[in-house]
Length: 488
Image (cartoon, rainbow, N blue to C red; front, top):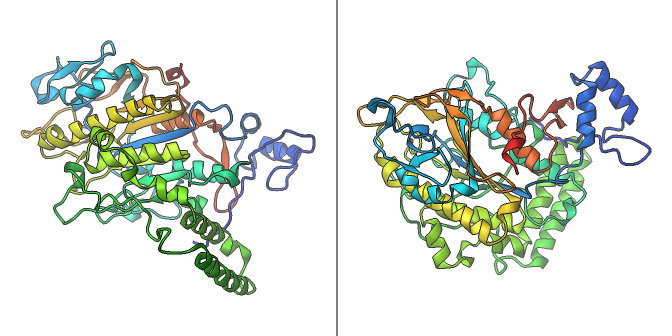
């Protein structure tokens, strides 16, 4: 796909008298077109978009930390325990009380149970896409729509929907304070989704928005085919969150960097004499971004986890998820707006626990419990919790009935999501599942609802439209509504 600059033709920011939008249309013409339905938009939607067109204004959250537990954590073994269910359903773990009335958590989430007065647990996330390609759905708010002809292809394509983080990055770069922002606004830790397995999974990229709005991602790999760095302590040698190509200050001088820029600029100028400008628009953004990152001392320090005390690093856990979660806090503290912290599946399973409950008991639940409780406490101690929305979720849950070893299959019809910070009302259990945690009894929550909630918290109009590859305005989320009732 040829790279091209994408603009905001329908972000109707109208604060003066003359009402031209980014595409050059007057406000009246844009409203007439919208009212006529030529872009598939209604006049009420256009007006709703206009009212809150300037992003990040009056936001509940300055930043989002999106803890993505890829594979599908079991609702029945975590946040929706059913102690009175039949033995074939309730699972091998004991339920414990939390600080939230009527919310029973797994015994291996003991630390989280002690801070449940600071979190809101949605127990009724639901969608019909019962496989791991729902990673696209949960990260974009758009269902997986690739044709059946693609077969088992799980890898991302430029035509996919943009991730929430990429939308945030896009809006940040088009905002009035873009020139003041020293860090990228979309960061992905500790590696791209699937990279540790040899895949390049969907949902994490900018898709048709353009590669310039992809996340800035670190690349920490496992030590060997059977290694799982999420299940063990990691050394500082492994935990090199610095970006590829990001040289140290000693490795490249500013003069040398400027010399490279001058030579590259001459080359680019010559090429532009022969090629269309559209081809280079996204490339220029990437090039300029790379230069600013290489020259940024703030960037180097932000990605150096050794700046943290040993005691705090121990509190988060020295495993890969714990240290990545701590790095996520460092990113929002440094100013990033959307940070995804991934728990991937180096062993091919992890949260995708088909086979046994042993990994849940030994590594998965305790590792999450340690890192999550440390993050919430750390953010609060630093005065950051009130301005940071923390989202913890997988792309699905697990089957109510387990097998003989207490593995469970895929189950997307009912699963949990945990929210905290940014004004989220703590001590809340939202939605009730049926007796087997198989289906919502009330208050079902879709990925669209979750995405709109995240956008709304950041001060982004959930009805916003962005231009697709052909310049047609497309809603960032096509249905659903933000869960404003979860905020105080």
